[in-house]
Structures are given as structure tokens and as C-alpha cells.
Image (cartoon, rainbow, N blue to C red):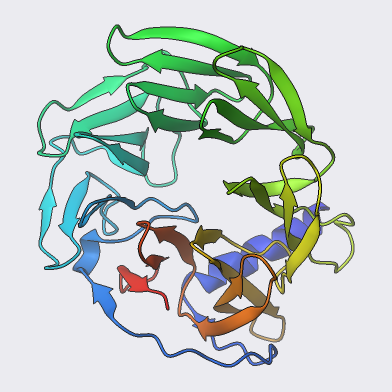
Length: 334
């Protein structure tokens, strides 16, 4: 992407944070938004990253108003409590067992600090772990944390606090499924392959080659991925695709309207896709909408317009859109 196109997209992206209009160019029936949950300025994500974590009937999230601290909200009653004592800015929270784990930042748009902030869900035992590492992605599984620094993948044992180097690889995303760590293999600025590493045999296998994935999710032996546009200088837009881990049955499920599209997530047999359409004119605007498709066929099940950008998150039972606008809410999706 040349500098002029990047600058144009950046300007339009800034505009959309303050205003999104209804999309009228996609002929898909609208679905009424129901059961909208709003918890005030403490319940929201920041930037374009999904930050809400769920456990039982609770959500864990940072403050929208300041981006500082970590909060716990009862999804049934809306009661919200601050569980962090420090005034740090937190993002990308995960929760497992009695603890939450979050990235920590210097400021709202500033540099990420080393390590992870770990806090007991009752607000006690707050500390920084893995302070020697600048972590790009992490997954908490049982008593271990698997994390990437962008050049290596490590495992951290929370019992004896030992760190083991597993793989030396350029990667920006990891996932742990059963005995395997799946990870992107980067070439330049792109992730071209997905490899897997066996935690038991310590062997590495190439699972998928040249899939050109910008982001991906593994679900039931399939990889669902958003591909990079093949011709960045053209007006082409990418597809959301599905392919088996053995490389078979590669198929397109959804053609994005926006140049890159935004987030997507999977819940049961549905895929929720947050997309956008640039409306270039005297005053440029962006139309934002969520498209719901069948994860196996790609059949469109419905579409709803939304006011602002956000991330799509699930608690295993329901899907929500993290509103990044002034409403600062989770919107329950159909």
C-alpha cells in the first residue's frame, strides 16, 4: 500500500471514530438489535482490539473513559466493580481460574510495557509477571502461559516460574488446540503459512502454506481466515475463507466490502463479521455493519447496522459487539 493510500485510509478511519452512517449498498435484510446491555463508561474496548474477557456470568474489561484499571461486571445485574489497585492502562485481557492476565501500556496510544499484569478476580494479588519479555500474543492454558515475542514462542510455568523456549520463529499470532500450538509464519509484513508445534513430541509441522492470512481462528479442525488483498494497489477486497487444517476444502465464505474489513468471531454455527464501507465524497464517512453468516456454507443469515467500530467477543453462549463510541457498551448480537 503506497503512502498516499495509507494516509487516506488513516484520515477516514479517524473520521469514523466520531461518526458512522447507515450502509445502504448491501442488499441484506436488517435484524433489529435486541437486549442491548449498557454499563456506563466502564464497559468497553479501546482502539480496534477486543479487550473483554468472560468467565461465568462476569465480564472483565478496562475503563473506556480513561483506559485505566480493570473492572468486573455482572452481566445479569450490570453491577460493576474495580478489581485493580494500580492506575495502569490495560488491554487484551484473558481470564482463567482465579486470575486475569492483561497487556499494560504506558498511555492510551503509547508503548506497551514488558510482561503481563496478573490480578486475582477478587482484586487481590496484583503483580507483573514475565517482566523481561515484550509480549506480542499470549494464551493461558491450565498452569502455563504460552506467549510470543514476535521472534520466539515460549512457555511459562506458573508453579515454578520457569520459562522455556519452544520455537524460534517470526510470528504475530498463536493458538493452542489440544496438544498443538498453531502459529503464523511471517514473510515480510505478511503471514503466509500456519505451522503447528506438538507440545508432547516437540516436532514442528507445516499445516497450511501460502494462505495469505491477515487474521485467523481455528474451530473444529478448520481455519477461518481473513486474507490479505493480493493487489494492494487496486480496489480489490479480501475474502473470509475456510480451509481444513490439512489444506483441503478451501472455500470463500464472505467477500468484504471494506478494503481490509474489521474483526470477526465464531459462535456455534455462526460467524459474526464487522465490516465497513468507505463513502468518499466532499465529507468522507464510513458505514459500519455486522454481517452474520453460516460458518459452513457462508449463507447470509442477517445484517445489522452499528454506530461505531468495535470488536466482536463471545462468552461461549452469546456474541457481543464492543462499542468503541461514546455509549461504551456491549451490544448483544442475534
